[in-house]
Image 1 (tube, helix red, strand yellow):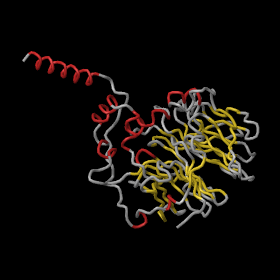
Image 2 (tube, rainbow, N blue to C red; image 1 turned 135 degrees about the horizontal axis):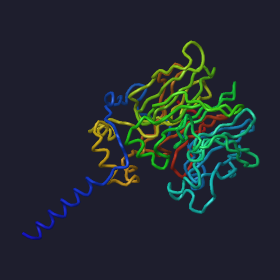
Image 3 (cartoon, helix red, strand yellow; image 1 turned 90 degrees about the vertical axis):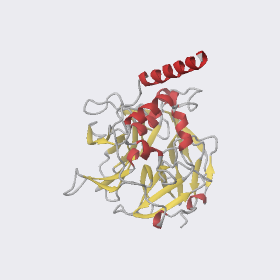
Image 4 (cartoon, one colour; image 1 turned 180 degrees about the vertical axis):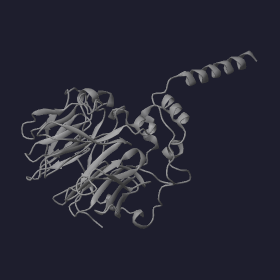
Length: 383
């Protein structure tokens, strides 16, 4: 009897301890707009993403975003804080290290604030790489010498609010204005899972003028704003709100300039980067699909219950959430009007999964990711 009483006391003490343990997140109730759409019609399962191959296995870890120059070189950044050049013959060259070049870089997200983590990568009109490093801010990098120049530090931020998680990036070819996203003013990239679980609206869309050095907040109160893409005429841009599965259109020109519209909501998955294709459509990488099976998607189930979220954030290690993510690759193709026109799937994750970017250059499609140790490519855009 005494041993049973001792066990009950121990369990009670454990329960009280867990209850009193502070949670790292402060979520609010959120109700999703309905079950995800069914895998039918344009969303029907196919194997178009299995018709590719992997490059640089074990050499490139998490090639997240891409840019390319007129000579056919492709540029990307990886989890170890490095910027790389991929030549037309698929040779690989390190351009620079965004932070400190330590042996531990890339071994754990704990080293990212020291090593850096380049996300958005684009070339400006002068042939310089503009890089959104999640921890260090906006940089200009000479792709030939690797020389770095800080344009805007995270600590500087905008309107008195520092940046915590720089992410998406786009540059106007007409004005040179740099558009970028800060996914959260609370959580950095290494705590992205807490950002998704908490489901806060602490993200912003911003612009940076390299001529004047001025930075402007274009939109705030966004749910993990991520990838952005300018339209062909640059009269609007599309923006992905990853944590709630939504895509916005922000008008830059015309009578609607400065206004925002929702063009896709309650999506089949959580969108990452958005890129303009080589045939005037938008390509959206889905970082995690959102499927209705025997039960609703996990994040849908816990969204209305802050207490459940706070408890999970206390007791479950962040790395464990990866076990809930299916190995399923999905790309959405949208027309310029924002309507879905096609999808590409890899339902078994044979080539890849968790797609961050879909970048087309000289007939090849590069499929980015945030953590995988290879670069998947499609040599043709098969239908």
